[in-house]
Image (cartoon, rainbow, N blue to C red; front, side):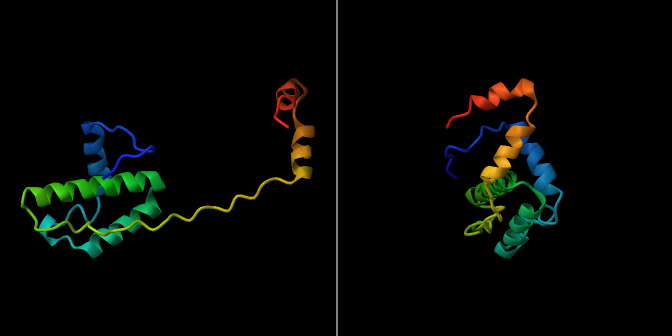
Length: 123
């Protein structure tokens, strides 16, 4: 699993807590590792997006992938059921910029003490 610009450093204690909260506490986490199928992992991963922030869901899925990869390396399982599992793209809200009139109304509503900051804006 690659790092990338958005990757963060997480220590072992944080990973253990994440595993307890977001993997062990789920039906997937209570399954024997040999019984876990790709369909289980896909359903679980999709469910994480409904319960967690997208970045947290991706972190948790990445940790699960690492655990399953380690199980393959240790010959506990023959292949990783997380292989090929994809997280659906989260639905992003449509950003609608303010109109000129709305910006002007905001400017007019700013307290006099804060108007100096507003006037420092870039044109």
